[in-house]
Length: 196
Image 1: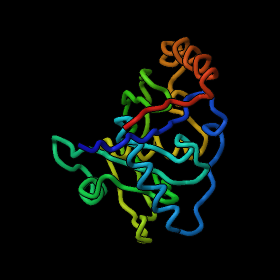
Image 2: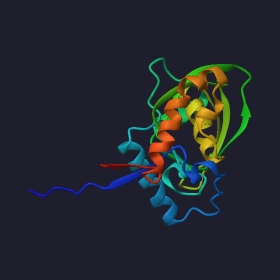
Image 3: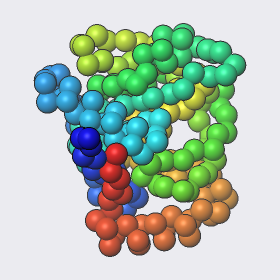
Image 4: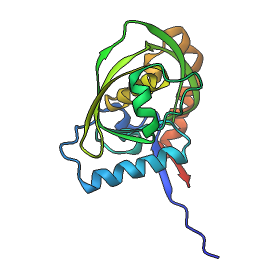
């Protein structure tokens, strides 16, 4: 019987320099970019994530993968109705071109901040624009978990972690855990590894 050898995937954790920098736009979708998108989907799946940004994967490019589950209460926005059936999805140079006025709290987690969760207040809806791997440019109003994940992942592309968005009183609850993660991560070159 033949066994497929497992592949190793890496995600960078809090404290890594690449997570603090603004990622560079992708000028052309090449075969290399297509392969990167598919590999990032594999890594996101291996780590059981719903979103992964280029910098988290050690890539200084504006590329994000999403895998948002279908909401139990049905689609609440045109973006959810159009994009969630396409998951997993690769977004090239994603951007938010408008934000809704309603702000809602939501507990967030992150593959780069493992086992640490905290409340972040963000707009409930966003107008999202991105290029897909086939070159199509799409633009939708998105709500629900999709809107939350879009904002979280674009923060990564701009050098920010969700913990930076937390209110001071909420951040103080997780601060010691975060510092411990950063200290431990330094000894591992800020890399989480998994075989899948």
